[in-house]
Image (cartoon, rainbow, N blue to C red):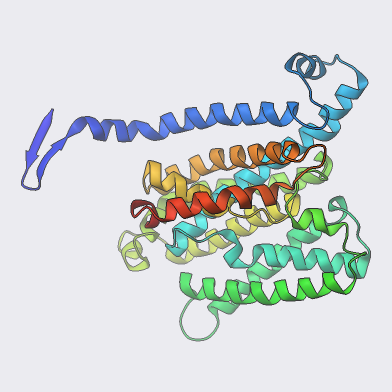
Length: 348
């Protein structure tokens, strides 16, 4: 049916398709996530055919197959899903709050704080692996994010997206310089940090991840509660206030959620780049600007990309491996450039 108005003809069917598009997206991305999980469990230096994988899951198979699956592949896959969900949702929150489609969680200093804390742990405490410094990385992310908020809130005027962004970029640059100086001062001591610092899913076990996973769940739930208010904030704080939104509460909620999500993801897998930047940007281009849709679909698409990048890193120079953070950077840079060149995708 066609309806004619003063602005010109408008057709109802496209609007119906638009309303149903997020549901179709969830279904398609859910299938893609299932496929990515299957590939993550089967592909690697020791390939596991689907029949062997099924026997191992049901308690059969050889001891070697069960060891590869339970001790290596499952923790790695869980780490990829957790890090992907956290980075995708954190990126959506930061972009909505700062009203900048090219923002990512790193602008709040999360990665720099986690890396500095790990560097100090290696230099001063003699830590040697991700199992030992996962909580130190999370603590560093929390401390630096709080510091960024305090710096952005000091002086005249309240903290706003621009002040927080400038504070995060400045403080992150300083901390990154300190971290680089520490690592160069004693390369042998920091050898264990290299894989984590490149973004890796390989060395974190389930036992170390469980407490962090609980914090990530809190961050995702908080993001879901913030999504309706972020629809108003994305139009500007004055408009949000006129809609009755609690701008200060949303600001604090975003800082807490991003700290939990990006800090936890960095603690588990190291600083994985481009996921929090690229995924919400792509979702917004395809599905529109409703923050509820962007956050929900980012939570599904991001782990798909992380897992597929990890699988690609296992086979691209087999039997050696490329850390997932390097693969996401190689994939993400050209994709992001292509998206940014589209006028519709470059604005909120």
